[in-house]
Image (cartoon, rainbow, N blue to C red; front, side, top):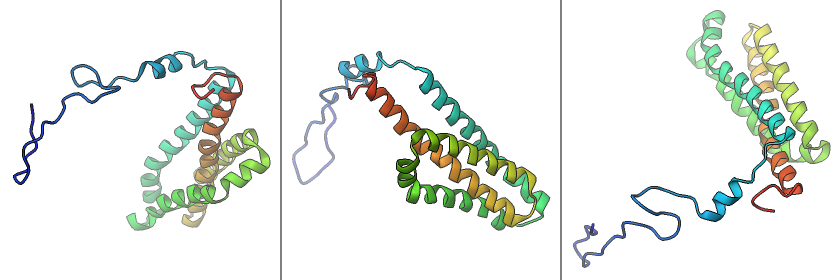
Length: 171
């Protein structure tokens, strides 16, 4: 058995297997209650719709990053200035973090999801349409502002829908 390398204290045996959910050959296994709860998840229309919305935003987001290098070449700007697009992405996400919960509470999760997705699509369209640096920065902020609403409202919408139908581990 392994021992602790402390010289001032006597060696202490370190257990190989943690009690609870670690069993057998060092592999991690979920507790049986979690496995039973996971087997009951049903993906209904709402679930697939939210997955689709998140997929659209993911497509936009992961397409945006590589396109900034191409935009830098088109705008003939430095790497520092093109890096401001990443700062704009963070700004859009922080803005949703500040006002998102109040907006979602006021207009509802469904409107926040669809409005966020529409805003992200408008933002990416503006990003593709403009070539001036200030306008592309604004377009990136708009894109991530809308997309962050999709991410924020989707998990809550799924959790509430699953809880209300009795189809979640918490219910």
